[in-house]
Length: 240
Image 1 (cartoon, helix red, strand yellow):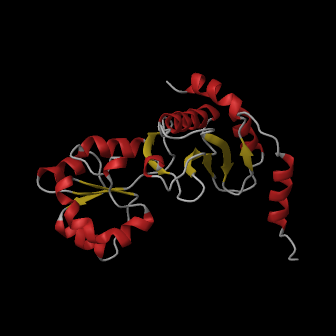
Image 2: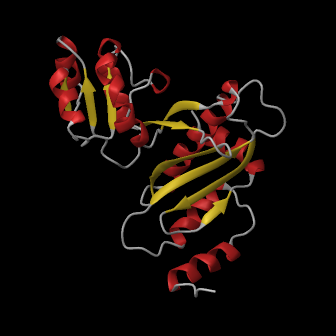
């Protein structure tokens, strides 16, 4: 049996130390206390949902605006024509254009985090599913990235709007909710906003327990199970 590295031993010790569920406020404090890296770790939230993603009406894909932001500069590219190009640039798009931008993307240009397109330009991107799809960059109406409201969409993405979807296996949903350097309340606001949206997008056909578990973790840090009985109180305190 292979020996555990020093780091693996540390993570196993943390896992053993924090086996019992904790409330969200305590989880954030623990993540900060147990920080063992020099860089600023990302904080993530992980849900295991009681859904069957093989059923069309139980596939979850939506967006959430993190009130505390993501702590990351979001680079937005826009595929649009005419006056929409200038609207995109005025709203803060990092790059915008039509055929010439699509050709550039097809040639390997992927220096952006979000790709937004107007409906009339989607035909130009139709052949790029294999390039953009695996990277989560293909514009989609369900997450608001296929739209005529270019300016509004860019500002929302820059301000902290993120998309999420349930994985096909196991009904897992995971996303980053900020940086560990954020103030506790800022992280809790983001966490509460995500929990609130997850509850709101519950498929009507789901029977039994919907949210089976929630874990919060940080890069190279412990994964902490959240006590689900404390979630409602969290929402009342932090969701406006």
